[in-house]
Length: 192
Image (tube, rainbow, N blue to C red; front, side, top):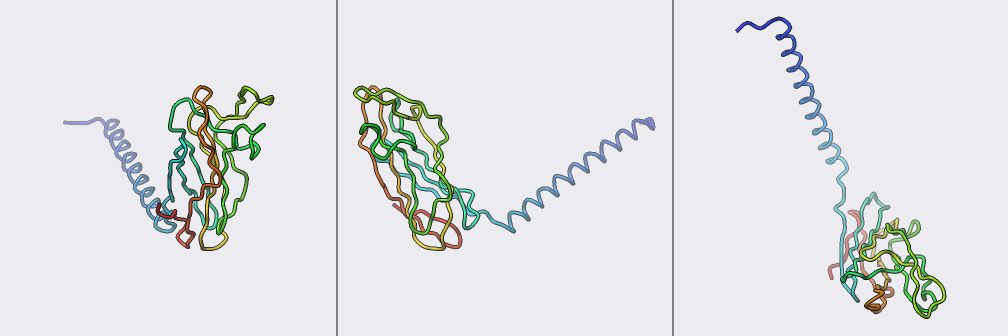
């Protein structure tokens, strides 16, 4: 079969482009493998528990010693339940509600303010004059920047309460401890 010079040139160009793409992909893969080998990322430390109608999942991510991010996901176990704002006073508003809280002690220090990835809305509670700040029904993810103050033991202290406008509230949880160990390899949660 005789191919025109133009068809031969087009086929040669396509082959060259395909080989260049393959070489580029191979080089990217080698670079990623080299980068991973040079700076292995510590696996994310995780822990969870359920108490008083809420499941809490904790994790430490973005760990670049001595800094990382502590994430706490608060998930009400029943539909229609909400959590209170992190900005709520410790004793609530006129005694109603308890703030969603995450604090660290021991070998970990907070490096900023606790942030929630949910918008605050207010509700009216019978018998309470002021509006009460809550998150929408369902899970709420909070993050806290942390810093290790050397190796050793650390504790995460959690607080929350969940309520439903139709079913009432669960018993609040205050200063619920979860223990971690900080080593040169990073943080690990104690077995529970």
